[in-house]
Image 1 (tube, rainbow, N blue to C red):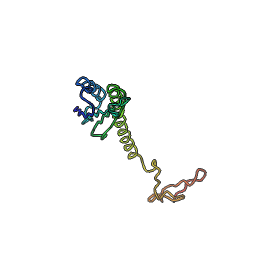
Image 2 (cartoon, rainbow, N blue to C red):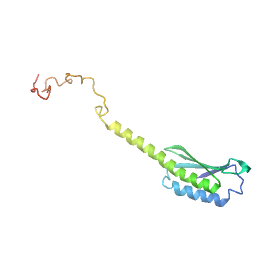
Image 3 (cartoon, helix red, strand yellow):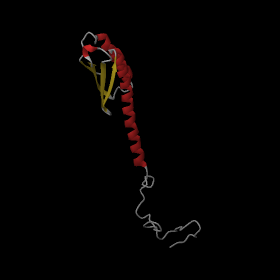
Image 4 (cartoon, rainbow, N blue to C red):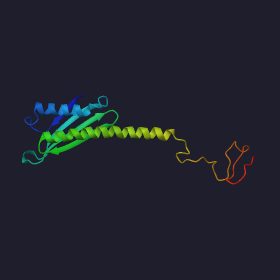
Length: 151
C-alpha cells in the first residue's frame, strides 16, 4: 500500500518515527481490505498556526476500486492523538462503505429473483372475475362455497 503525505506542519513535528507509527496503524486497520485499497493520502494541518489550542488536524483519504474515496478527519491537541483517531475512523469508514456496497448487491439479487406477484405487480388479466388467457376451458373455482364448474 502506497501512502502519500501532504503536510502544512513543520518537519520537526512530523518526524520519521511519527510517519512510521501512522503507517503501521494504517496497515493494521486496512489489512482486511488489501486488494480493495488502491491508495492512501494523509494530510497534516495546523489549523490555528502558532496561536496554539486544539488545532492539529489529520485527514486520511483512502481510494479503492469498489467504494471510491473515503475520507476521515480528526482534530486534536497533538498530531499523535489526531492521527490515532483519524486512523480508527478510516477503518470504520472503509468497512461501512464495503458493507453498504454488499447490502446493495444482495438487495439487487433478491429483487431480481422475485416473481412479479411478490413485487406487487399484478398482471393485467387478473381483473375481478376474469380468466387467464388459455385457461378458459379448464376448471375454475368461483368462490369458496360455489361448486367447481367447467366451461
